[in-house]
Image (cartoon, rainbow over all chains, first blue to last red; front, side):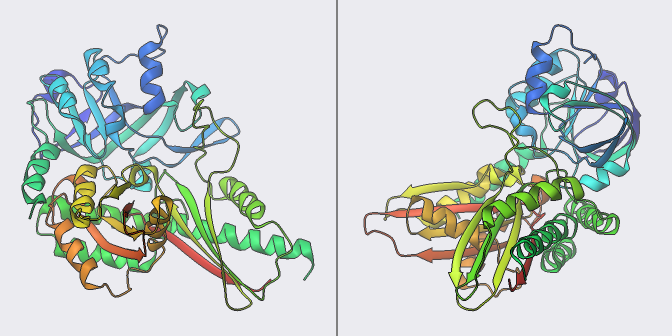
Length: 185
Length: 272
């Protein structure tokens, strides 16, 4: 199954997909990595809503030209570093997470029924940039440009592989099981 | 050549090498990725590898860094013993990196390790060695955090199995280091010496003929089936490089330096 999803993405939309499906996202996504996760969970005045939001694990390379931001490269970062905070942001309403490398079994369980994890090929910073139309806003710049939250307008962002679905299945876990079986050989 | 101009020439060459490494994937790596894309039988693994190759082409055509993690530059400098260098090399590398950060541009992601606040100190590593001749030979390798984070070192007991440690390290890393990876293994020397051995192998060309142990390790790693981006396939690694050095009879240090598919490298030689 392959389709274009428009944000905000609702849990009902997410539940239609299973691992192996391909998705493209159009609309608004928010970058967030290590520091942004900690910051947005502790900030009572969080300037954006996590309800039905799409979080992109990315620390883009962005430069400021006078008053505008220019994206140079914006591929995904390793998602596993955000394992700890992810069940909490999902609890607060996040319905889609884009990243690379997969997430823990605790995260897989926390996504059940309401969120999915989408893999974008790691290292493909220019490919990702091509699908970003505009920087809409930026929050938490005190964390630095890499760690800040960038609100991005994207069009047909993808191809994104449903790598962990909302039904408790993870491609990474399936691969891990078969890899483990060959370890001793 | 005056003092100033030798330093300036060195800085200019270093910036050019950084730009080349960040924006153009070396031919040997591109060819290895293209071979892997052909060899993969699964549709998913093939598509990921073709996406990577497309990204590489786009980056080269637009002159932009291929990955937003513009990494940590690791320099290897071989200084000909007949060369006379009248400037501070480390300081010149730092200046080149600072200028390159604005020119290419590169991402500013250096932080103080304790406070985690942005650091203004340039982030790079450099190995210096003396060789024959009258030239200064410089190699640069760009190391991303995803692959550096899963690299590992073990002080094994001499009776323990080296291959098991290597395989387990790759297994544990899964999709995190952006496979297909390049695996540098340093065996012997000391605690830090083994890490240097491992890291230095990553400067090698993928064209270099592999020995029997390297070929065997590559096969066993690829049999793990982790595949491109950890999503399954027969290409988990493109190459395995091994370097050994003598060690104490009571010791067996083994270091595994993992590099992502974006095996960004460049080099230059100058007479100063």
